Image: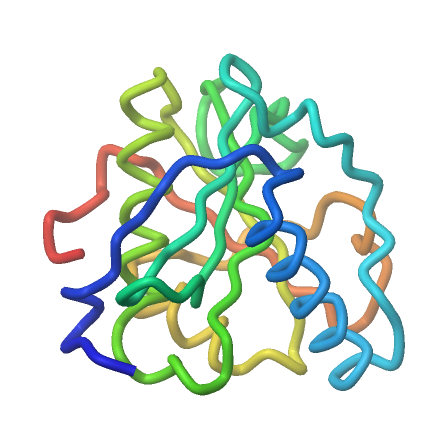
Length: 173
């Protein structure tokens, strides 16, 4: 895949029902099966990613859909280190294997943060797992800090949650 640090990634807002979005979500589900032994069964409603509720994006390198990412509004989970704030959660971050290592995930993350901040979000949180060390590396190198576990997998031993105020978002993406 072409690109240096994601420079060739064109990020497009699409409905979660768009064929490229559907394909990428299914691919990330298969990644979860390979890494965790099962699909992610976090309850999600496609309307959570519609305008006003959140957003879903697909990243294209050339004409090929290679990345996805989404955000949705979320009440600030209990125990977070921030005062009450308008919170969003990052979901469905994924880059197809042949396109990894080109900065596409970092570009998508920056895009999601900027979009959510433009909609009034003040804090972003996300949930990942120990079987995704690349994701943990991306988030920690992007300024995310560990936060108390929340959400569907809060009791899973391998679950890891991260967050950060969006005011700390950087233009380095």
